[in-house]
Length: 264
Ligand SMILES: C[S@@+](CC[C@H](N)C(=O)[O-])C[C@H]1O[C@@H](n2cnc3c(N)ncnc32)[C@H](O)[C@@H]1O
Image (cartoon, rainbow, N blue to C red):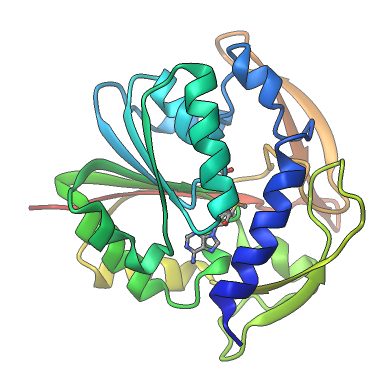
């Protein structure tokens, strides 16, 4: 199966639904709201830095980082997503460079390196080989640069009936999308489970030094079944909506973050 063609077609169709969804709230973004979530917002300082966003979808997070003072580039496989991202950059009057590319061939098209490489929520499951992913990250970082990811915890996939551990064959699913305005139309999607150990080992093998690893007992997105909504106020008085899952009355880890340095 040509997984790239299958996934590109699905993400092209999903993007057309996502841009009109409350989930992504494009109007809110255009009126000044940030699309970034509390986790990455607190853990990553981008001011004055060049940032490459891997699998940037239609650019809301990328452009939100631009508002925080980064010089941004986003790459994504979906040509529809990249067209939308470019339109949003114009509408929001933010400087950004968007490139349509498969992640594995993006480094050749970029021909430069960045202070930060960033990726988040629902990205790595679409990639078959994390060693190639980590090598691409290493190649794209300046010496001393930082890789940062905030990703859904693979334990959630286990509760959803998927393998926690890596498998030889991908999962091939017929699925509707995750935004509230989904019509129920299903697309074929090809994905791979990646346990935490595989992520760590790929980054280490590529030569990156892990600086920090965190796990979170909530998801900032209402993206799974059986989540309980919570409203929390942080130390600065800012309100955040979180979604939690319980198993045998105990909270399940739903997100993890990693920061790694490209030591010269
Ligand atoms: C769930 S979205 C990522 C969402 C992200 N948190 C954001 O900024 O909105 C996954 C994205 O990965 C992209 N993608 C999937 N496979 C890819 C690949 N091989 N190379 C580059 N992008 C890919 C899809 O087109 C989609 O936009």
